[in-house]
Amino acid sequence: MLQKFIFLFTLINFLYGQMGNEIAHKVYSKKVVDDLSCIMRMKLINSKNKVKNYKMKSLSLDGSRKQIIWFIEPNYDKGISFYKVEHKNRENEMKMWLPAFKKIRRISSKKKGDSFMGSDLSYEDLSRRKLKDYVFKKLEDRFLNGVSCYVIEIFPKQESNSSYKNHISWVDKKTFNIVKEN
Image (cartoon, rainbow, N blue to C red; front, side, top):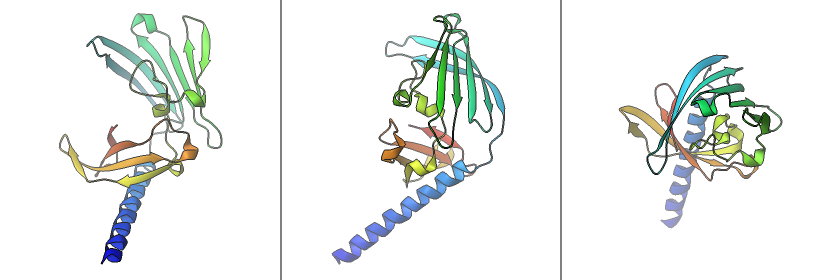
């Protein structure tokens, strides 16, 4: 009886793991636009409820493998720029232009877990993840704001050098767009 239970438990875990991989592959194999330009806003609220509003312009090329973000507002951060180029066979290249210091700051791979402009985003979050560097586990499906979602837990393999122990993605079942991550 115990052997049957262990076999069934192992089979269920294997199938859920396979389903997590299938969902991740569908998300990452979707056709993306080659070039994209947009204006973004980011609102940061600290523990004392102080609000900081940013306005940025982003230009992404080659399916977001190359990206530059210019800070437009607030005035004291105007001109700061973030530049990223993703490479297939070597570390991604990330740099920040800091006009107040007239310097370019290279973001090393050791710093990819650092906060981007004081937000909850890290530099690692600004790059596409390589599927081969992660293990995907399907969790129970959920609804988020009326959208039926697959929920997958993502664990980095040791060689990925991720700053995360794990994270969870909610994926729209119809479009395979990621609607939430934490």
